[in-house]
Length: 343
Image (cartoon, rainbow, N blue to C red; front, side):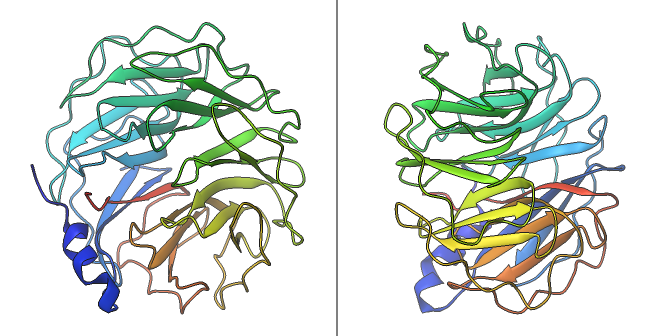
């Protein structure tokens, strides 16, 4: 098994070394995905895949072992996957049963054995066994999400799968064990609008939904079902929440959103702390997605306008923004992911 670059960084992280690996951006406009080496800054963009995704890239994810990259996109086949080893390999064959509409979100299960795609059109979530290629699509859940799927996430133990979607209740969560179990009851206090992004905390004890309509971010305790929604942060995100992520150690929660400052980060400990100060150099347009580096030393925000991606050092606060990549993504940034550090 290939050892991801990030594993080398992990050994020295305590001595001040930062993450060294790769960073991927899914975006509008061909080639729809751009990947760069990362080591305290962007390296030279990797060559585009020989077979491009068929339309705008809406979500990107690396497999847990870093050997595969997946892009959910507009236009059939709606999901494209490639071997990854410091560059794109030959695109894997499409699944025999395609997602039924534009791919909005993509996620691998924590063990890498399954690949989920949230998409437009019923059943709005499609999950496949994954082993260097797609297996036969799992049966749809008995109760499908009520609207188009925008984001999907597995819990850290792989025992649950969550879909953020259009239409109330805006978030649907199911037990997962090589197939969907019976949908969990909806939270007693629903997100206030369309669910755009969903994330579990690293310990699996909380689930967060970024959504349209104030307060723009809702977080709940999670234990085989939703607990009572946590109180909203004292300083809300400024507008529609587009992306949400917990830091790897679970001590911070970040939301990318419309309207300046476009990224808001809070301490997290079973509730929101006081919002961290905004970065000195803000993202230049509405934030669409956010990701922490696997060792927590950097945070990336994806946004509409050039340079499409902004990355900052992170240490309980924003450092000075890193220089933009020499070759920027060619269209609006929709999703960002760092190559994992393999356990």
